[in-house]
Every structure is written in C-alpha cells, then in structure tokens.
Length: 560
Image (cartoon, rainbow, N blue to C red; front, side, top):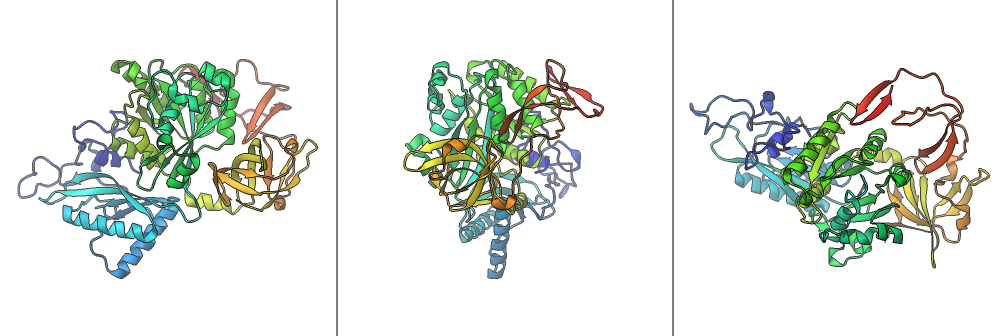
C-alpha cells in the first residue's frame, strides 16, 4: 500500500489526532500536504464545512495483480454482475493465497469517494453474499469518514476476506524469532501460544524448552517451533482452551509458525542454521526496553540484512521501565535502522489502525520496519502484535509459488527421528516441487557420494496428517523401515529425474560483515547453504572488486 494509506486510516483522521506512527513514518495526502484531508479545495456554497478540505486523500490506482480490490459500491447487483463479482473475488483470493482486502467506497483510480451509511450497509451485505458463495469469511478491519463534496457523512470500509485454498489445509507463515539473550523471546512466544500472561519469573516459557539445562539456565540453546492460529474471522486459536496441536490446526485458517532461535553468542551457529535452513518468511527481532541494543542484537540484525529476511521489531519488558527509557530505546532503534547499512523506515505501532497499516506496508515494501512496544507480564499492546500477525499477508505471490511447484521435488532434511510403530521420520522444508504420499525419491549424498532410493509413507504438517506437500511448506515425512543410520542433517530428498550430482569445490561471492583477523587463502570457515552446514577451506581468492565500508551502529559492514 502507498504511504498515503496511513494518513487516511492511521494518521490525523484517527480520534485523538495523534500521528499514525509516532512521528517516525509520516504519510502525505494528495498534493503533498500533511493535513488530514489533503490540500485545500474549493469551498462549497461559500463555506468549507468546518474547515475540512473537499479533496480527500487517495490511494494508488488499483493493480490488476495482487490481492487488493477497490469497489465504489456493491448495491443490489444483477445476477450477471453478481457472478462476475464472485469470479473476481476468486481471482483476488488466489493472488493472496487465500486472503484478499476489499476497499469499499474507493474508485478504481484510487479516489476516496466514500459511501453513505445505507449504501455501505448494502455493499457489505453483498460482499458477505459473495464470500459465502466462495466459502470465505469477511472481517471489517476499519472504517473511516472522508469528506467528498457532500453534506452527508461518507465512510470508507476496509474488509479482509479469508478462505483456505481448496488444495491446502491452512495458510502458513514462518516467523524466526531473533534477539539478545534474556530479551524475552521464549517468554513472548509462551504468552502468545499458551494464552496466559507471564508471572515475571519466566513461567510462560517453561513449555517451550526442550532440554533440562535450558530450564535450569532459562536460556534457549536449540531450535524449537511453536504455533499460533487464527480462524477465518481473525480470532486467535491457541492452547488456552486445552487444545492439542491437531485441534489448533483443524480450527485455524491461518497458522503462524514461530521458529524460536538462541540468543546467546555461544549458540550463534544454531541461530544461523535456523535462518538459512527453515526459510522463514520474516523475522521478529526482540529488544529489551531496559537494555536496548546490546549483546547479539546487532549480529542478529546483520544476519537478517545479509540474508535479506524482512523483519519487524518488538521492544519487550516495557513494564520494567519508565516511559522515557522506552522512548530512548525506540529512538536508538530508529537511528540504527535509518543508517546507510540498514536503510530502513521505522514505523512505531501505537493503535490497531497502525497495526493494520503496518502489516500492509510491511508486505508491500521491504524497507518498512514496524516497531511494537509491549509487555509479556502486563499484556500491554500485546493485542496490536496479534492484529499485525493476523493481517500480515503472504510475502510471496501466487506466481512465484506456482513456478516453484512446477519444478522437480527437492526436500531438505533438517531433523531425523525414530518413532515407535512408524519407523524413521525426517523433518524439513520442501524447497521445490510437490511431494505426495507414496512418492519414490532418492536421498543423499552419502559418505561415498551416492543417492539411495526410498518411499514416502506418510506426511504430517504441524502434527496433522497431510496427503500433499507443496513448495515452501515444512513437514515431517515417514520413511517406514529405511535405515536411520544412513541419514544425516543436510541431506536432500529429490526426484530421481533430477539426476543429482555432488561437488566438493565451488565458487562463492562473499560479503565480510565482521572478522577479527585477516581473511586469506587457507582460511577454514563453516559454510551455511540452506540446510547444509559444512566446514570448508578457502583455496583461492579472485581479484577483489573495490570495497566500501558502511558503518551500522557500532559495527562496520564491508561490501562492493
């Protein structure tokens, strides 16, 4: 969405008159005015109706692609027109992989006209009929009044339409959780997924730990996964009602899979593996309000930038600090994000309108970085984060998804288990193609560089049975009596038609983020390529391009 959306829905039009994003990201109305109603227009009947401008803000013209649809009004359409509107909704839902946003009261050129209350009520009724026809649900995200050459109040309504695609069980987004040790990552995930606030001593995080030493130290050392669901009406579905993971999946139309990564510097290699192997759609960078940017925060920020993973920031533990301390931490983050090494546009979220706008702009522009300030103990502003996650659309479009699905099957092996009465089970991500129950694949490479044949017996996603796995989805595959000793992390399961080969020498273009000594020939490094983590030796360094040094906070980043 264009930045002008924030002026209409999240700017000075909001009751209270405060800026939409705390003065960090400011939108402009038509003609570049920062006022609520855009530039001043001609007065009507010699009056300007209470000082409001006649020319309203506007949106960018409607795009043919994408999941956003403009409709001026939907009042009593004919049967032929209704069928055409239903077909149009199916297209928008397909483009959004199950989600679409309708702007009611907006012309195709983006002009914000608005509708009277009766027309808006009739239009929403028609939209509801359209959604029922395709098996979807609608949720009104927000309403705002506009001023457009009329003495009658006119409104614009933004509506979310959500429908799980027929070939999927639910929509799925993967969010990697980054941040310094003791910033509250596991506690926040515990509060979101368990539905209970923390007691201030880490009770909410206990269910997330996988090892005894994690419980004793309170520090995550391994990668764990937690799920948060939203039903078709946008309501939270989690473990609060004693649900099992299977029940959450069955009740949810959209699933957020959190990848809880380690914050301690000792486990940095585990964090890097989680970012490269599990292909997160975006990352959540957690910063403690009382310590600010400290420890591994800068390293995690640099990793997200280097891997081009979109990220948003959550400032936690605001209940422990004075308001001035929180504001100082936010200003520190804004300074770092605006520096040349990051080149981001920080957007402070303080209301539900801001959260909706942030979700849309975050998906449209990789430079926008929403910032939330919340507490896992008091629950302050926790609902804003839930609104953001509910509205956040898939960050890959349907065309990219279709192209990946048309390629040959390739599944990355990240975890290996032995399950009683099931046999060998592998977990990972399908990077391309389609995988079905009963498919014959080859897995490797083994120690001697070979690939072995195997059969996929069954598939599960988030502990629920699934018959078909599509590119970009994470799942576990049961391999029956296949010998577990022949498998290891970093292998791939591919279609036999791919005729896979192996290599021991390759060329790479690198960017040196930070290094204490000289990077030279013979230097030993650990290479992370997807799910592959392998020790390598630098054999030769080709002629270097001119490099420039970019300072990012207290760190220096070098690049061509």
